Amino acid sequence: MIPIMPARIALALAAGLALVVLSSSPAVARSERTVSHPIARVWPTAVRFLAVDERLAIIDKDAEAGYVVFELSSKGKSFRGSLELVTITDDDGRDAVRLVIVIDGRPIYTESGLLDRLLDKLYREYGDPAPAPAPTKPPAKPRKPAS
Image: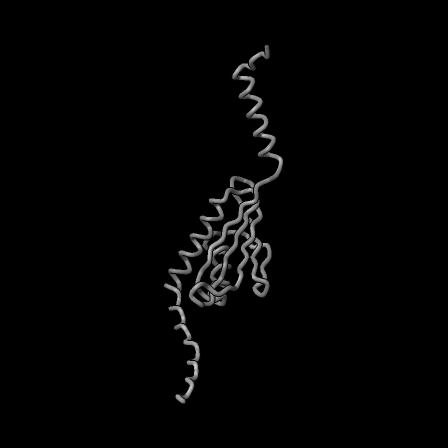
């Protein structure tokens, strides 16, 4: 007969196994949003938002490459983060920017909150995106003359 393991020991083993699995590789959060405004508007607003509105220390930035590296301080600890701005065309054919943010060691809601506040700022400053361009009609097919 096989002895039955007491419930407390089984629970402790399961918790220990879960701890090993969860701590074996650090989770990397990554949040992104798309805004249908041209990069020429989004870039300066994003940098100003991080430095002035959020009071984050800007470590490095490159407008041409489309990134900002910053440092977030919370409860005496510092966390490095990055904001990447990628020029794209949205589903309606407008110039748009994909904003991708990563903050090492912080939960995803920290990144999402920053992006949501940045989008609010863009809306307050520029309003709704420009209307989508009118669809272009394909050229008419030439008709064959009647014989």
